[in-house]
Amino acid sequence: MRYVVNEHWPYYAYSTLTAEKGVQRKLGRLYLRLANWRQPTTMEEDSYKAWWQAGCRKIKMVAKGTVKRIELARMDIGEDWEKMATRCDAESVVVVENIWQDWQRWHEITLDKRVGTTYDLYYCGIVLFDTERFPHHYKVNF
Image (tube, rainbow, N blue to C red; front, side):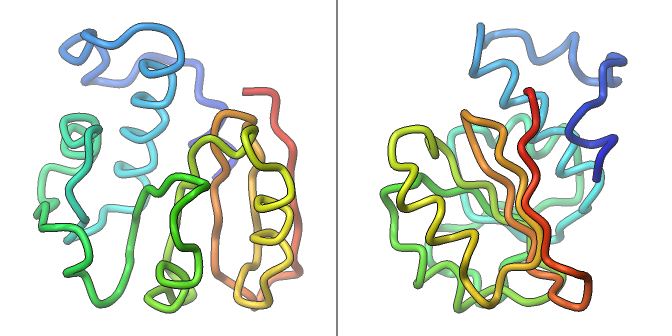
């Protein structure tokens, strides 16, 4: 996971996905790397669809709320965490955007018993649900 978050070498699809600027581009590149690492089969539609699909060409995008088991998902800090977490298992990865807008809420998510490891990247947080490993919460200079 360390190389997914902190990769500095250009990926194969970076040059074709250059419409976004600044933080959106940075997050898009992270999402491409996450999709490449996780290789999900199904994911809920969102605005970063092109980035997710560049990372994993086999992803089937479906309507929000129709996925029963989350493999890889993106949500905003203001959305219903409980609704998302109940559909996750040990292999699930959830990206929570805008954690800087509600640090208390992000802290509650990191303390959830279902959560194993989290990465605080300031603009977003990455939540892994593998609780067999010792829980750890990283702060990364992203």
